[in-house]
Amino acid sequence: MCLVAFAHMGWKTCLMTVNNDIYPSAVAGSVSGIIAFGSSFGAVLFTILTGHLFQRCSYTIVFVFMGFLHPTAYLVFRLVVKGPVTLRQAIHADETS
Image 1 (cartoon, rainbow, N blue to C red):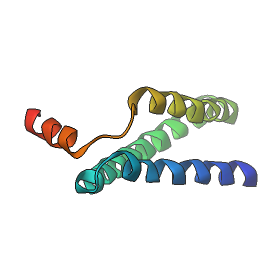
Image 2: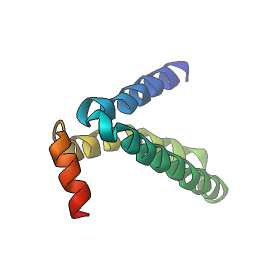
Image 3: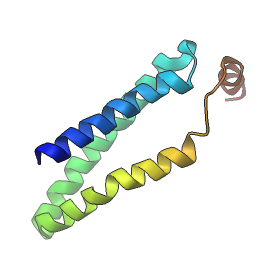
């Protein structure tokens, strides 16, 4: 469990610094806020889901599900993040939305 927790925190640290690498400093704070909201919302949903799964099934299904979360997150990350965003692209995105 110690190695799994260490690997997870390494993964999380890398993900939290990626937004500073791909977004300009003018919007990096906003992106960090959106990421924090999404993380908190996901934690609330997963906590509720985990409780229901423990009551109806067993611990096994939760651990299997958790085993697929990091590979799935990596695939989603690779699909969503194409490369660095310039300040012009960020401003243009704000104007169109």
